[in-house]
Image (cartoon, rainbow, N blue to C red):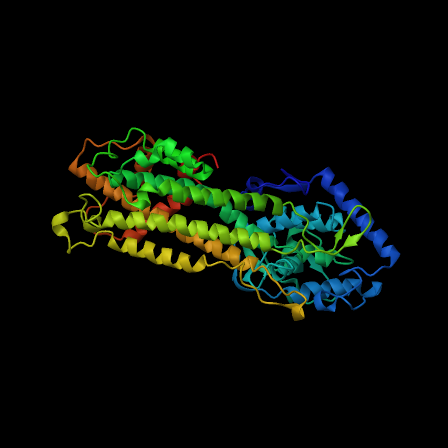
Length: 516
């Protein structure tokens, strides 16, 4: 059972709740913090002072007064009017992650909401009511307003609402109205009042969820990139001098040191490497630790940002200990947007250098004696195309990544009649980082597939060559999934099968994740 306290949620726990569907509860500390915060808010209400979003309108309408009798309608109008997302539906794991993050941030004790509101989100998670959330429409600045409002429509209600105004949700595999999903799950939908609506939808929560899952998976991708490079080192009979630890300690960059040691360790015992007379390899091999290491260092920075953000109070205003409701801007997703941009750039580079290594495997002028396009029989070149088109696919994905990794966080358009005049664009950045990850995963799978084929062709020429301790294990596992085929074949089916094997939750991932 995962216990939320608003302070100690980590990425690993987020993965357990979003992907493995571990149940979640409020800790006693969280319950006390939530109740104290609500007491402080009630004291502020009793004073009758103007407080943004409590007895005023929102955004440009912050100067309009709202009477106590209008507060429920104010909250309902906020949720209804803001639930305007578009695009494809977000995957269930992202919605679950966002719901957990929102519940955790509300548990911190700065939001003035009721314990029942947070518990409703947890009940939805535990019983499998998953709101339909559309992926586009958020600027990630006043928070992911449209996405969180879609979630809130399912969790809350208003007397006299139309069923369509409860939005849509998945329950037991069926997409039904939010009202029906909650009824079937036995969860009471709540009527919002006071500051409830703002608390639910202020914060770059979905941007953070998307980025958190991509960043978690990127740690594994870094391991795979080192493995792919190691296999290509062997396939191209590369020199291991550039992996010498003193080279990397002389520079002192942590990620570079880790990647160099990783590749060197994977190649231990290999007789493929250093078996050719050339003195120096191309950058895509010789500088692999430097490039992979820069990605690792960038990922560490992004993970640090995420670790803070998933435990952050991000709504506005915040109810602080001395009984004040203070307006601020913690909902602004600049840190998340920049983090997503940094990750997207890093993954684009990780994939880009992988595609260059795949290219070298294919070119008989660069691959030290392998057949062009890794055709199985050199005398059938032309009749057979080999795996030429896989490099085309990798190149296409690498080019797409170069476009997608153009930063989103440097772009802004004003909203709310210039009241919100500098926006983060965090949701677009997170979505693009996630797309870049998917492309990078495909590119690295192609390199692994090509390197294994090249190794087979090397072994045909010299059966005494021996793979490294780790590369040999990986090669054997992959050959059990996709045996070598000599002539042309339907390569897509094989590469897709290998992709599912590598990135699925199974033995290969457990073996090569590096304890992530």
